[in-house]
Length: 205
Image (tube, rainbow, N blue to C red; front, top):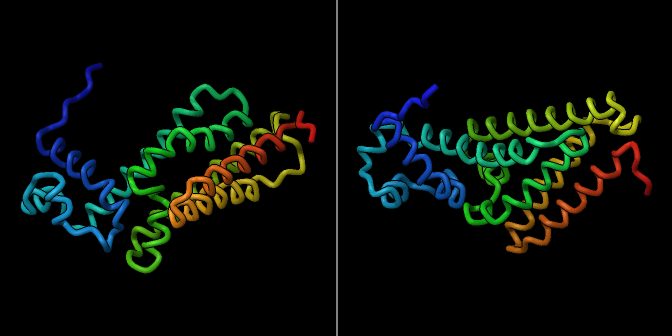
């Protein structure tokens, strides 16, 4: 079946989101003005308001776009995974491949939003927290299935593993961004990989 072509309005809307994505991610909601977006996109404010009700709506759409880039990287990395361990390992492997892109775009959108929106934007904060909750549920689900299938050792707490992985990803990301030193994040990824390997039912310390 042929893919339906986007209308001119849809193409313009997508272009604005793609252009605004790294700007919002680098400067944050409070630090980004519509003038920043119009200058980068080569459009007028009328064009922006013709496609988005206000800065809030644009920010929400941009956040979804930025997060989707990360989630798609996870999905692509896990596409060929056969076991629960391989699926879990898809997260740090995807982050390693995505690292330079994230740095170029201002860092992880979840980290940036959680840090900034805590004080400035309640709706964006809720969106970010909802994604973290879903992420935790997904990781815990993979661990649970691994236990049932005999791939992951019994006695493991799926929720604790999920929380630990997410904490290492986000904490390492925050420190790397603040210090301008990628080693914090890469060390976190190393630790996550070690944790995942230790879950394997055949793991020998």
